[in-house]
Length: 198
View (cartoon, rainbow, N blue to C red):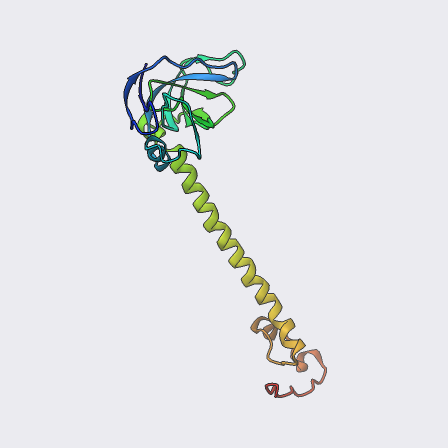
């Protein structure tokens, strides 16, 4: 198979002919139709992650992929040969990446059926960038939820703080719900004048 691979840390990447990977019993073999280039791929291909990631040469970079299932391992049940899939390779060793004609991926890993409305190139661009975007949205949403929760807690605590320090100026919501002495038939004591502590 053709693969963009590096033969050592300093070689850079080049087109090579390598043997096609064979799927383990829990893996599927995917004929890669498209892959993407992310920052991690550039770092891997440049040998920058030497000592941080294990490399097995020849090393094929690439994490995101989209393609067609060519072969199934004996234990894979949720896919069939011919299924169009996309996903993300999570192998701990840089060896069999997605910048090749074929890649193996665990059947229960980060792989799913490609949405029919997407081209292979579009689907291959989604996994890492899409997860990054989703994590960012969740982080912003969590910040908003925290801010709204804190704002509500301060709003609810305002009348309590005012009563503790003897402040008759109440929260606007509590003032509006205060009953009139006339309508309740009880006489109210005149409000105390608030003075700042000395």
